[in-house]
Image (cartoon, rainbow, N blue to C red; front, side, top):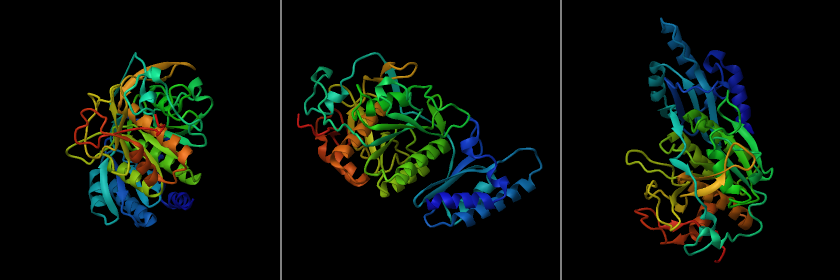
Length: 396
Protein backbone atom coordinates (compact mmCIF):
# COMPACT_ATOMS: atom_id res chain seq x y z
CA UNK A 1 0.00 0.00 0.00
CA UNK A 2 1.10 3.56 -0.65
CA UNK A 3 1.65 4.57 2.97
CA UNK A 4 4.01 1.63 3.54
CA UNK A 5 6.09 2.59 0.51
CA UNK A 6 6.20 6.16 1.78
CA UNK A 7 7.52 5.00 5.15
CA UNK A 8 10.29 2.95 3.58
CA UNK A 9 11.35 5.98 1.52
CA UNK A 10 11.26 8.29 4.54
CA UNK A 11 13.33 5.86 6.59
CA UNK A 12 15.95 5.51 3.87
CA UNK A 13 16.61 9.20 3.30
CA UNK A 14 16.94 10.29 6.92
CA UNK A 15 20.13 10.24 8.94
CA UNK A 16 20.11 7.04 11.04
CA UNK A 17 20.56 9.14 14.18
CA UNK A 18 16.89 10.08 14.05
CA UNK A 19 15.69 6.52 13.85
CA UNK A 20 18.22 4.50 15.81
CA UNK A 21 16.65 1.14 16.59
CA UNK A 22 13.00 0.72 15.64
CA UNK A 23 10.71 0.45 18.65
CA UNK A 24 9.34 -2.77 17.22
CA UNK A 25 12.86 -4.25 17.52
CA UNK A 26 13.85 -2.88 20.94
CA UNK A 27 13.80 -5.18 23.97
CA UNK A 28 10.82 -4.64 26.24
CA UNK A 29 11.61 -1.78 28.64
CA UNK A 30 9.54 -0.33 31.47
CA UNK A 31 11.52 2.93 31.43
CA UNK A 32 9.58 5.40 29.31
CA UNK A 33 11.33 8.53 30.55
CA UNK A 34 11.49 11.27 27.89
CA UNK A 35 9.53 9.15 25.43
CA UNK A 36 6.61 10.72 23.60
CA UNK A 37 3.98 10.10 20.94
CA UNK A 38 3.43 12.93 18.47
CA UNK A 39 0.25 13.00 16.37
CA UNK A 40 0.22 15.00 13.13
CA UNK A 41 -2.60 17.00 11.62
CA UNK A 42 -4.34 15.50 8.57
CA UNK A 43 -2.56 16.56 5.40
CA UNK A 44 0.83 17.13 7.02
CA UNK A 45 3.79 16.23 4.79
CA UNK A 46 5.48 13.41 6.70
CA UNK A 47 8.73 13.56 4.72
CA UNK A 48 9.20 17.28 5.31
CA UNK A 49 8.22 16.94 8.95
CA UNK A 50 10.69 14.11 9.54
CA UNK A 51 13.47 16.22 8.05
CA UNK A 52 12.53 18.98 10.49
CA UNK A 53 12.52 16.56 13.45
CA UNK A 54 15.91 15.24 12.43
CA UNK A 55 17.40 18.74 12.28
CA UNK A 56 15.97 19.78 15.65
CA UNK A 57 17.05 16.53 17.28
CA UNK A 58 20.60 16.66 15.88
CA UNK A 59 21.05 20.27 17.02
CA UNK A 60 19.85 19.38 20.51
CA UNK A 61 22.38 16.54 20.75
CA UNK A 62 25.19 18.80 19.57
CA UNK A 63 24.48 21.26 22.38
CA UNK A 64 24.56 18.65 25.12
CA UNK A 65 27.64 18.40 27.32
CA UNK A 66 26.77 15.18 29.08
CA UNK A 67 26.63 11.53 28.06
CA UNK A 68 22.85 11.12 28.15
CA UNK A 69 21.56 9.44 25.01
CA UNK A 70 18.32 10.45 23.29
CA UNK A 71 17.46 8.03 20.48
CA UNK A 72 15.13 10.22 18.42
CA UNK A 73 12.25 8.76 16.40
CA UNK A 74 11.67 5.11 17.16
CA UNK A 75 8.48 4.31 15.25
CA UNK A 76 6.02 5.75 12.77
CA UNK A 77 2.29 5.02 12.65
CA UNK A 78 -0.18 5.36 9.80
CA UNK A 79 -3.78 4.32 9.18
CA UNK A 80 -5.25 6.09 6.16
CA UNK A 81 -5.04 9.82 6.97
CA UNK A 82 -3.94 9.27 10.60
CA UNK A 83 -0.18 9.75 11.08
CA UNK A 84 1.92 9.82 14.24
CA UNK A 85 5.36 8.85 15.47
CA UNK A 86 6.99 7.87 18.75
CA UNK A 87 10.42 8.80 19.97
CA UNK A 88 12.95 9.54 22.70
CA UNK A 89 13.60 13.29 22.88
CA UNK A 90 14.92 15.85 25.31
CA UNK A 91 12.54 18.53 26.58
CA UNK A 92 13.78 21.32 24.29
CA UNK A 93 12.96 19.23 21.22
CA UNK A 94 9.48 18.47 22.52
CA UNK A 95 8.79 22.14 23.21
CA UNK A 96 9.69 22.99 19.61
CA UNK A 97 7.56 20.16 18.24
CA UNK A 98 4.55 21.31 20.26
CA UNK A 99 4.71 24.65 18.46
CA UNK A 100 5.09 23.18 14.97
CA UNK A 101 2.14 23.67 12.62
CA UNK A 102 2.13 19.99 11.60
CA UNK A 103 1.66 18.75 15.16
CA UNK A 104 -1.83 18.06 16.50
CA UNK A 105 -0.85 16.69 19.90
CA UNK A 106 2.15 15.58 21.96
CA UNK A 107 1.57 13.10 24.77
CA UNK A 108 3.90 11.01 26.93
CA UNK A 109 4.46 7.37 26.12
CA UNK A 110 3.28 5.60 29.27
CA UNK A 111 2.34 2.18 30.54
CA UNK A 112 -1.20 0.86 30.23
CA UNK A 113 -2.71 -2.30 31.66
CA UNK A 114 -5.61 -4.56 30.85
CA UNK A 115 -9.02 -3.29 31.87
CA UNK A 116 -9.76 -4.19 35.50
CA UNK A 117 -10.49 -7.90 35.80
CA UNK A 118 -10.21 -10.84 38.12
CA UNK A 119 -10.04 -14.60 37.74
CA UNK A 120 -11.86 -17.00 40.03
CA UNK A 121 -13.71 -20.30 40.02
CA UNK A 122 -17.33 -20.43 38.90
CA UNK A 123 -19.68 -21.19 36.04
CA UNK A 124 -20.57 -19.30 32.85
CA UNK A 125 -23.99 -18.16 31.70
CA UNK A 126 -23.13 -15.35 29.26
CA UNK A 127 -23.97 -17.15 26.02
CA UNK A 128 -27.47 -17.88 27.28
CA UNK A 129 -28.04 -14.25 28.23
CA UNK A 130 -27.06 -12.81 24.85
CA UNK A 131 -29.38 -15.24 23.01
CA UNK A 132 -32.49 -14.95 25.23
CA UNK A 133 -34.64 -11.95 26.07
CA UNK A 134 -35.27 -13.08 29.63
CA UNK A 135 -32.84 -13.71 32.49
CA UNK A 136 -31.67 -17.29 32.10
CA UNK A 137 -29.02 -19.56 33.52
CA UNK A 138 -26.33 -21.52 31.74
CA UNK A 139 -28.65 -24.53 31.58
CA UNK A 140 -30.95 -22.70 29.13
CA UNK A 141 -28.31 -23.05 26.44
CA UNK A 142 -26.99 -20.84 23.69
CA UNK A 143 -29.21 -20.27 20.65
CA UNK A 144 -27.28 -19.28 17.53
CA UNK A 145 -27.15 -19.66 13.77
CA UNK A 146 -24.91 -22.44 12.49
CA UNK A 147 -22.90 -19.95 10.42
CA UNK A 148 -21.31 -18.99 13.77
CA UNK A 149 -18.97 -16.36 12.34
CA UNK A 150 -17.50 -18.54 9.59
CA UNK A 151 -15.34 -16.52 7.20
CA UNK A 152 -14.70 -13.73 9.70
CA UNK A 153 -11.67 -12.55 11.70
CA UNK A 154 -11.31 -11.26 15.25
CA UNK A 155 -8.08 -9.40 16.05
CA UNK A 156 -7.35 -9.68 19.78
CA UNK A 157 -5.01 -6.81 20.70
CA UNK A 158 -3.88 -7.98 24.12
CA UNK A 159 -1.38 -10.37 25.77
CA UNK A 160 -1.37 -12.95 22.98
CA UNK A 161 -3.36 -16.16 22.54
CA UNK A 162 -2.64 -19.76 23.49
CA UNK A 163 -3.14 -20.68 19.84
CA UNK A 164 -2.74 -24.44 20.40
CA UNK A 165 -5.66 -24.61 22.85
CA UNK A 166 -8.28 -27.15 21.80
CA UNK A 167 -11.00 -24.49 22.12
CA UNK A 168 -9.69 -22.81 18.98
CA UNK A 169 -9.64 -25.86 16.68
CA UNK A 170 -6.67 -24.50 14.69
CA UNK A 171 -8.57 -21.25 13.98
CA UNK A 172 -6.23 -19.13 16.14
CA UNK A 173 -2.94 -17.79 14.78
CA UNK A 174 -0.17 -15.40 15.77
CA UNK A 175 -0.38 -12.12 13.89
CA UNK A 176 2.02 -9.54 15.31
CA UNK A 177 4.20 -8.94 18.37
CA UNK A 178 4.67 -5.26 19.27
CA UNK A 179 6.71 -6.18 22.38
CA UNK A 180 10.01 -7.21 20.81
CA UNK A 181 12.42 -9.17 22.94
CA UNK A 182 9.49 -11.25 24.19
CA UNK A 183 7.99 -14.47 22.90
CA UNK A 184 4.70 -14.34 21.05
CA UNK A 185 3.02 -16.77 23.44
CA UNK A 186 0.48 -15.58 25.99
CA UNK A 187 2.16 -15.78 29.40
CA UNK A 188 -0.58 -13.89 31.26
CA UNK A 189 -3.77 -15.59 30.07
CA UNK A 190 -5.89 -12.49 29.55
CA UNK A 191 -5.79 -12.54 25.74
CA UNK A 192 -6.50 -16.27 25.64
CA UNK A 193 -9.48 -15.86 27.96
CA UNK A 194 -10.97 -13.16 25.74
CA UNK A 195 -10.28 -15.15 22.57
CA UNK A 196 -12.18 -18.08 24.07
CA UNK A 197 -15.20 -15.86 24.72
CA UNK A 198 -15.05 -14.42 21.22
CA UNK A 199 -14.56 -17.64 19.30
CA UNK A 200 -13.97 -20.75 21.41
CA UNK A 201 -15.83 -23.91 20.40
CA UNK A 202 -17.38 -24.27 23.88
CA UNK A 203 -17.32 -20.80 25.40
CA UNK A 204 -17.34 -18.63 22.28
CA UNK A 205 -20.02 -16.43 20.76
CA UNK A 206 -18.76 -16.92 17.19
CA UNK A 207 -17.58 -20.51 17.23
CA UNK A 208 -16.22 -20.56 13.67
CA UNK A 209 -14.45 -17.20 13.49
CA UNK A 210 -10.70 -16.92 12.94
CA UNK A 211 -8.74 -15.46 15.87
CA UNK A 212 -5.58 -13.42 15.33
CA UNK A 213 -3.26 -12.63 18.24
CA UNK A 214 -1.74 -9.14 18.35
CA UNK A 215 0.56 -8.96 21.38
CA UNK A 216 0.94 -5.49 22.91
CA UNK A 217 1.17 -6.39 26.61
CA UNK A 218 3.59 -8.33 28.78
CA UNK A 219 2.53 -9.23 32.31
CA UNK A 220 -0.76 -7.47 31.55
CA UNK A 221 0.86 -4.11 30.80
CA UNK A 222 2.56 -2.38 27.90
CA UNK A 223 3.68 1.04 26.65
CA UNK A 224 1.29 3.26 24.74
CA UNK A 225 3.56 3.15 21.70
CA UNK A 226 3.36 -0.66 21.54
CA UNK A 227 -0.43 -0.59 21.89
CA UNK A 228 -0.69 1.90 19.03
CA UNK A 229 1.78 -0.18 17.00
CA UNK A 230 -0.33 -3.31 17.47
CA UNK A 231 -3.58 -1.52 16.73
CA UNK A 232 -2.05 -0.02 13.58
CA UNK A 233 -0.96 -3.48 12.43
CA UNK A 234 -4.43 -4.94 12.97
CA UNK A 235 -6.20 -2.07 11.20
CA UNK A 236 -3.85 -2.14 8.23
CA UNK A 237 -4.09 -5.94 7.98
CA UNK A 238 -7.87 -5.57 7.73
CA UNK A 239 -7.48 -2.91 5.03
CA UNK A 240 -4.84 -4.93 3.16
CA UNK A 241 -7.16 -7.95 2.99
CA UNK A 242 -10.37 -5.93 2.48
CA UNK A 243 -11.91 -7.42 5.62
CA UNK A 244 -13.90 -4.42 6.86
CA UNK A 245 -17.14 -6.38 6.41
CA UNK A 246 -15.67 -9.49 8.03
CA UNK A 247 -13.53 -8.37 10.98
CA UNK A 248 -13.43 -6.76 14.41
CA UNK A 249 -10.62 -5.43 16.59
CA UNK A 250 -11.00 -6.28 20.29
CA UNK A 251 -9.14 -3.80 22.51
CA UNK A 252 -9.77 -4.57 26.19
CA UNK A 253 -7.11 -2.24 27.56
CA UNK A 254 -7.51 0.66 29.98
CA UNK A 255 -6.17 3.25 27.53
CA UNK A 256 -9.15 5.48 26.87
CA UNK A 257 -7.20 8.66 27.67
CA UNK A 258 -4.63 7.87 24.95
CA UNK A 259 -5.48 10.53 22.37
CA UNK A 260 -3.38 9.16 19.50
CA UNK A 261 -5.06 5.77 19.89
CA UNK A 262 -8.47 7.43 19.94
CA UNK A 263 -7.59 9.22 16.70
CA UNK A 264 -6.47 5.93 15.17
CA UNK A 265 -9.75 4.26 16.19
CA UNK A 266 -11.76 7.11 14.66
CA UNK A 267 -9.77 6.93 11.44
CA UNK A 268 -10.24 3.16 11.30
CA UNK A 269 -13.99 3.66 11.79
CA UNK A 270 -14.16 6.08 8.86
CA UNK A 271 -12.44 3.38 6.81
CA UNK A 272 -15.03 0.77 7.80
CA UNK A 273 -13.18 -0.95 10.67
CA UNK A 274 -15.10 -1.93 13.80
CA UNK A 275 -13.36 -1.61 17.18
CA UNK A 276 -14.78 -2.93 20.46
CA UNK A 277 -13.34 -1.54 23.71
CA UNK A 278 -13.80 -2.00 27.46
CA UNK A 279 -15.70 0.99 28.80
CA UNK A 280 -14.10 3.40 31.25
CA UNK A 281 -15.17 6.80 32.47
CA UNK A 282 -13.11 9.76 33.64
CA UNK A 283 -14.40 13.23 34.43
CA UNK A 284 -11.14 14.87 33.34
CA UNK A 285 -10.48 13.07 30.05
CA UNK A 286 -12.53 11.92 27.07
CA UNK A 287 -12.65 8.13 27.30
CA UNK A 288 -12.76 6.39 23.92
CA UNK A 289 -14.19 8.04 20.80
CA UNK A 290 -17.93 7.79 20.27
CA UNK A 291 -17.50 5.63 17.18
CA UNK A 292 -15.89 2.82 19.18
CA UNK A 293 -18.24 0.21 20.61
CA UNK A 294 -17.71 0.64 24.37
CA UNK A 295 -18.95 -2.19 26.58
CA UNK A 296 -19.49 -2.56 30.33
CA UNK A 297 -20.19 -5.69 32.36
CA UNK A 298 -23.29 -7.08 34.03
CA UNK A 299 -23.83 -10.08 36.28
CA UNK A 300 -26.09 -13.10 35.77
CA UNK A 301 -29.19 -11.01 36.58
CA UNK A 302 -28.20 -8.31 34.09
CA UNK A 303 -27.31 -5.91 36.87
CA UNK A 304 -24.37 -3.58 36.25
CA UNK A 305 -21.27 -5.13 37.79
CA UNK A 306 -19.88 -3.48 40.91
CA UNK A 307 -16.60 -2.74 39.11
CA UNK A 308 -18.25 -1.28 36.00
CA UNK A 309 -18.58 2.45 35.54
CA UNK A 310 -21.37 4.17 33.65
CA UNK A 311 -21.60 7.12 31.31
CA UNK A 312 -23.09 8.47 28.12
CA UNK A 313 -20.26 7.14 25.92
CA UNK A 314 -21.05 3.55 26.82
CA UNK A 315 -22.66 1.74 23.89
CA UNK A 316 -24.19 -1.28 25.59
CA UNK A 317 -23.80 -3.86 28.35
CA UNK A 318 -22.87 -7.55 28.12
CA UNK A 319 -22.11 -10.42 30.51
CA UNK A 320 -18.85 -9.89 32.39
CA UNK A 321 -19.07 -11.50 35.85
CA UNK A 322 -17.89 -15.09 36.40
CA UNK A 323 -17.32 -15.94 32.74
CA UNK A 324 -15.67 -19.28 32.01
CA UNK A 325 -13.25 -19.51 29.07
CA UNK A 326 -9.95 -20.87 27.78
CA UNK A 327 -6.69 -20.31 29.66
CA UNK A 328 -2.94 -20.85 29.35
CA UNK A 329 -0.70 -23.67 30.54
CA UNK A 330 -2.13 -26.59 28.58
CA UNK A 331 -4.23 -27.54 25.57
CA UNK A 332 -7.44 -27.58 27.59
CA UNK A 333 -6.92 -25.22 30.56
CA UNK A 334 -9.94 -23.13 31.60
CA UNK A 335 -10.52 -20.29 34.07
CA UNK A 336 -13.44 -18.15 35.15
CA UNK A 337 -12.93 -14.40 35.04
CA UNK A 338 -14.76 -11.13 35.55
CA UNK A 339 -14.28 -7.71 34.00
CA UNK A 340 -15.34 -5.23 31.37
CA UNK A 341 -12.80 -7.09 29.21
CA UNK A 342 -14.98 -10.19 29.29
CA UNK A 343 -18.04 -8.10 28.43
CA UNK A 344 -16.22 -6.53 25.48
CA UNK A 345 -15.19 -9.98 24.26
CA UNK A 346 -18.85 -11.08 24.18
CA UNK A 347 -19.63 -8.11 21.96
CA UNK A 348 -16.61 -8.66 19.70
CA UNK A 349 -17.84 -12.21 19.21
CA UNK A 350 -21.31 -10.87 18.50
CA UNK A 351 -19.89 -8.45 15.93
CA UNK A 352 -18.24 -11.17 13.84
CA UNK A 353 -21.26 -13.46 14.35
CA UNK A 354 -23.54 -10.77 12.88
CA UNK A 355 -21.06 -9.87 10.14
CA UNK A 356 -21.03 -13.49 9.03
CA UNK A 357 -24.82 -13.76 9.24
CA UNK A 358 -25.98 -10.38 7.93
CA UNK A 359 -23.04 -9.25 5.74
CA UNK A 360 -22.69 -5.91 7.53
CA UNK A 361 -20.43 -3.88 5.22
CA UNK A 362 -18.78 -1.37 7.54
CA UNK A 363 -18.33 -0.11 11.09
CA UNK A 364 -21.27 2.28 11.03
CA UNK A 365 -23.83 -0.32 10.00
CA UNK A 366 -22.30 -2.82 12.40
CA UNK A 367 -22.72 -0.50 15.37
CA UNK A 368 -26.24 0.45 14.29
CA UNK A 369 -27.21 -3.23 14.02
CA UNK A 370 -25.88 -3.97 17.51
CA UNK A 371 -27.89 -1.09 18.96
CA UNK A 372 -31.07 -2.01 17.06
CA UNK A 373 -30.86 -5.64 18.20
CA UNK A 374 -29.99 -4.82 21.82
CA UNK A 375 -32.55 -5.44 24.54
CA UNK A 376 -33.76 -2.11 26.00
CA UNK A 377 -34.34 -1.33 29.69
CA UNK A 378 -33.26 -4.70 31.10
CA UNK A 379 -30.02 -3.62 32.83
CA UNK A 380 -30.26 -2.93 36.53
CA UNK A 381 -28.53 0.21 37.82
CA UNK A 382 -27.42 1.33 34.36
CA UNK A 383 -26.95 4.90 35.57
CA UNK A 384 -26.75 7.55 32.86
CA UNK A 385 -25.61 5.04 30.21
CA UNK A 386 -27.92 3.84 27.44
CA UNK A 387 -29.86 0.95 28.97
CA UNK A 388 -29.10 -1.59 26.26
CA UNK A 389 -28.01 -5.23 26.61
CA UNK A 390 -26.26 -7.19 23.87
CA UNK A 391 -28.52 -9.65 22.02
CA UNK A 392 -27.92 -11.84 18.97
CA UNK A 393 -31.47 -11.67 17.61
CA UNK A 394 -32.20 -15.38 18.03
CA UNK A 395 -35.90 -14.71 18.61
CA UNK A 396 -35.92 -16.48 21.99
